[in-house]
Amino acid sequence: MISPLELSKLKKQLEELLDKTFIMPSVLSPWGVPVLLATKKNGSMRLCVDYCQLNKVIIKNKYFLLRINDLMDQLVEACMFSKIDLRIGYHQICVKLEVIPKIAFRTCYVHYEY
Image 1 (cartoon, rainbow, N blue to C red):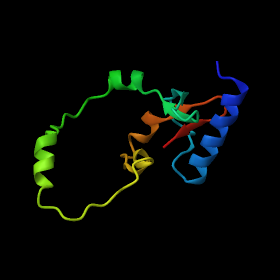
Image 2 (image 1 turned 90 degrees about the horizontal axis):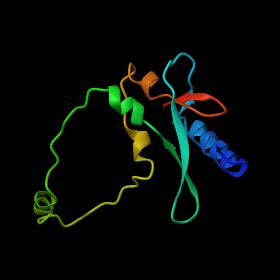
Image 3 (image 1 turned 90 degrees about the vertical axis):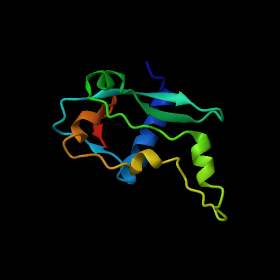
Image 4 (image 1 turned 30 degrees about the horizontal axis):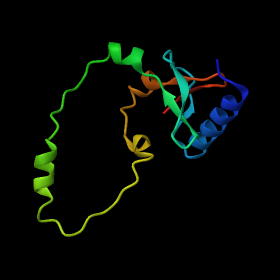
């Protein structure tokens, strides 16, 4: 159960995501995973989409990750570094059109998809 305070914060975050066109109302998706709000260290709340059930039915692609030592070795000769904002990095990942309905999520307001 979500408190009235959490509902208002959820609504605000959904409006921000809509304004940035990260999400849109879902019309035809039969999928709809739940959302929850997680409290961050600073007391603010973060919208989380619970894909646990979806993860059980998808085929996983396996990619090998480089070891941190190998990555650091590649940086030895570097003289300039840049900084990127990964805070909204999740919203910059392209998803195939046929997958979009599967990553839809539901709230007490509307059914949305990325």
